[in-house]
Image 1 (cartoon, rainbow, N blue to C red):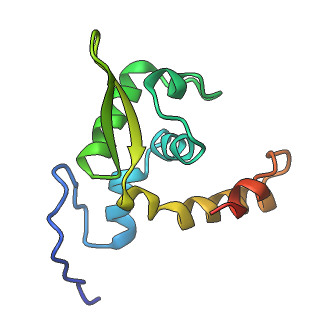
Image 2: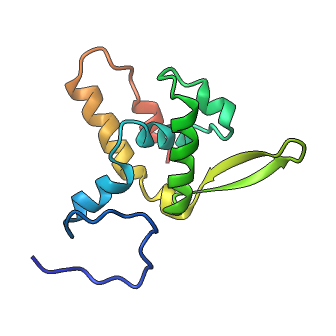
Image 3: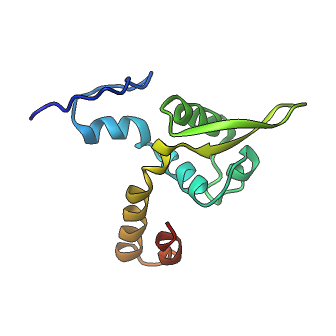
Length: 127
């Protein structure tokens, strides 16, 4: 296979098992929590406490680590909205928003292939 060259800098903690684009992508978003956080961001959640209210109940230590990983890979950014104590609101970057077609395809597949999933048609259609 031909290697695709890129001018982008490599993200700090990419574990390259191979140069396969699927493998490299999974190294960033392939765990069971990261795409759920991305889903929440696409649905408008912004704060740590909002993420903790998701039905999957992500443990706080994993949530903190995944937010750091998403920032390291420039999929999200953050901005302080409170000073004492400092609290942050998170937002998708352009790079993070570029995952929308992937998220949309996963939702569509789940709706079509897994009985009982809630209908995401309306969410998928608002772009």
